Length: 78
Image (cartoon, rainbow, N blue to C red; front, side):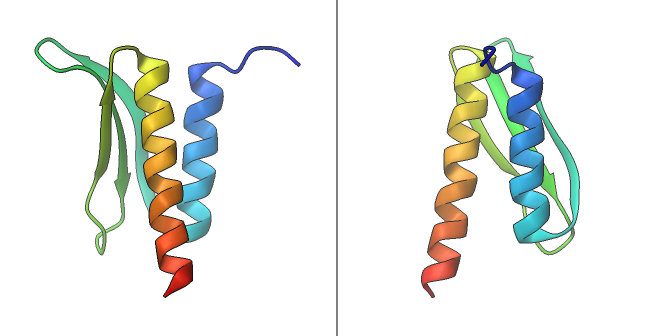
C-alpha cells in the first residue's frame, strides 16, 4: 500500500469525529512560528476544539488521532 499522506490522516480524523461527535466544522493542520505544527479538530457547539502539536505535520496529526481515539474509548467505557 502507498504511504499515507497528511490529507489521508485528516480524512480519517474527520470520519472518527463525525461518527462519534456528529457535528464537525473543521479538521486541519497549520504551522505556528513558536509552537510548530498544530493539528486541530473543530467540533460542534457542544464540544470544544481538540488540538495537538508536533515537530512535523504528520506527528501532530498522529497525536490528534490518538487523542480523539482515547476520548472515544473513555466515552464508551462509561
